[in-house]
Image (cartoon, rainbow, N blue to C red; front, top):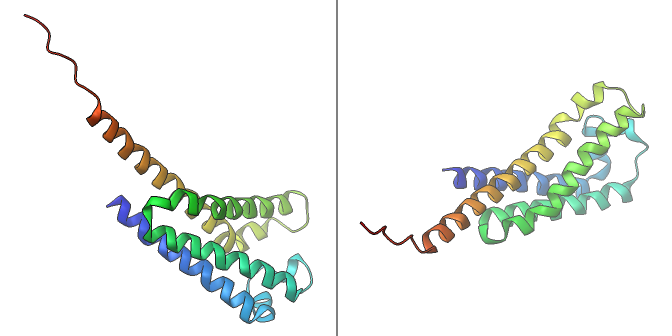
Length: 150
């Protein structure tokens, strides 16, 4: 049940990241003005938005492919998770240093913090499942203690 939940959530996250990347590449200025909190962070730069759009496409592919290929999930999800968490931390630091007000923690929550938390949960959840499965295999392969003499 947990394995299927991880798979479904990863697929949804992957598709959402991929769709965001497509939006950033196809309509960078519309993306810039549509996403809450983005215009406050600096002036529109088409090249920059498209560069980040490529990153979102790649993260989407990594999560979606990892959803379909459990064998390589940890490898596929490690870097996008690191980027998403780093991105969320960077947004918190912007508030902490006064670049923008604390209300932007709420503005950014759905688009920045939630994907980071979901990716961390997926990565950790799969790691725990994989670790538990390998422990069960090693326990099954270990020789049992000989019976005690009477």
